[in-house]
Length: 356
Ligand SMILES: Nc1ncnc2c1ncn2[C@@H]1O[C@H](COP(=O)(O)OP(=O)(O)OP(=O)(O)O)[C@@H](O)[C@H]1O
Ligand SMILES: [Mg+2]
Image 1: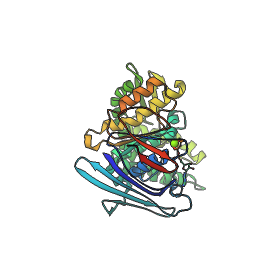
Image 2 (image 1 turned 180 degrees about the vertical axis):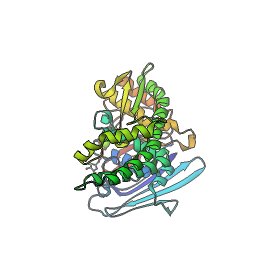
Image 3 (image 1 turned 90 degrees about the horizontal axis):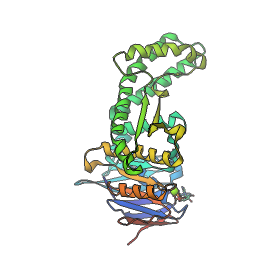
Image 4 (image 1 turned 135 degrees about the vertical axis):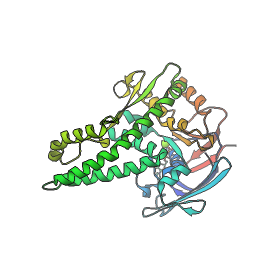
């Protein structure tokens, strides 16, 4: 996919912006606090109607204004689409080719944007919830089944936790909910395991390009119970074993919502051994992996890499640029980078212009 044209109106620090982009590498350059990440954020917003920096849409509206709009022209092979989003503190309206889109899952299929931002670097240093969220978001984008399953599982989990919080919990009801959760869990953890396998298939190629030959990386997923033919039996046993503690702590302590991921870089656990730069490289390669899982070149996602090169030494920066020049449309923000064969967008104080 290629974002050919973008118009912003009262979005963050942009009063109005109207700009064309290159189908390959776009460098968004400017001093600190000028609006580079804001521009990257607007591009990413086209994919999930959500920012990676905040869950509050009102913060995306220019201070002192009521409504912000993002309008985009997207090319997918011979197809041209227009996407327009209007947002305020009270509403969000999304239209594709002038027709309203109600389900956000539809939007991400039409404008798929992968984003890397500095906030992703500690993915393996922080709490498991962040890693599950990474898995859920990337999987939900690639599988509508997963989207439905995770929503169902979350609903059952909320019901079970509510039942556990009753003054005297109804054990019969807990049993019913547990059975339903187990039923949803099997396809859920199988999809997770499959997806992690897929990622591991493309990860070595990306890491070798970024870090040099001989680097290895593996994403490790350990389901709460193995998804084999004994799953139901073993899952029942796991829930039964946890029941006493669940009743005491009034919350569900086992299940897919408590699983975690780890990353082995050259055989060592990134969380325990990884340097700052290694964490950055590993997380970047992981974020880029879904790009390689989409086979159709016309459907390849747009990549938005915010501040990706900071903290990288010269060799790694060189590797990075050599690599991303082989990909489709990429947006990179930086304070200063010199690399030939790229379109440059100069940003200063809420204005962005394409360098001639
Ligand atoms: N809703 C808003 N209305 C007006 N200005 C805003 C709004 N939200 C953020 N800003 C301002 O936008 C400016 C630019 O932010 P942005 O994060 O894009 O900077 P940047 O160019 O990425 O800087 P850095 O190089 O430090 O990452 C900031 O000064 C911020 O205060
Ligand atoms: Mg920034």
